[in-house]
Amino acid sequence: MGMVFMSSARMTGYDNTDAVSKKAAMEVFYYDADANEGDGQILCPSCNPSGARPEGRQLTQKLLETRWAAARIPVYESQLYGARMISEDGNRVYFDSFDALSPIDVNGEEDAYQWQAPGSGSCTSQSPTYHEVSGGCVDLISSGTSPQGSEITDISTDGRDVFFKTTQSLVNQDPGLRDLYDARVGGGFPPLPPKPIICQGEACLPLPGQGSAEVAPASAVPVAVSRLASKSRAWRTVCPLAWAAMVSASLRSMPAVEPRR
Image (tube, rainbow, N blue to C red):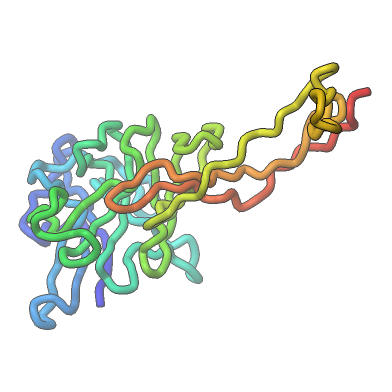
């Protein structure tokens, strides 16, 4: 049994005094009630693995506008539902960090991270991303290179699907707007099929011995059709989550156009 929360208190001995503002920066903590033979333990997944003081931001979240934070978790949008930030087995914790906790996090912006307990998944005390400061393996979920920040939105019960928002195009089908992605364990989909060949004029005539042509002339193809913003191809694997674009929740429809004559 565990609980994830934010606090500016110094709970693990890590110096959370912000390097810029000199204020106590809020960090993300994980209370593991089953640790130490039931005595419990508090860990700091978001504390900088290097031991350096954090470089946070002033929050804009509701009720936290005056607080300074190095990391955060989503607040409840309503009394009826709050985003899940810990897997059901308590072995994975997810959060956003303004501080760079990975060497590949180089954008100086907010990014999504995963903390994993040693002994679960591929995390061990010998793993390159394991750190004594956090007591687990800390891995980057978002790219760490987006010009704008990325944010955790929610996770599945088992933590195998991590939903996060980013303005960065992580697949070719993404035109660059702010989109919702799914970092999925073993995720990814086959590449999209190639676009149909459109012929024009005499190019539509069948070659000798091939019978009738199987492609339509350009004049018979609607100029605009309804399309689904399907982002369904694996982008890359991250510790060990595979980046796969999440199929858009709604159709982006364009008005049908009569064929040109």
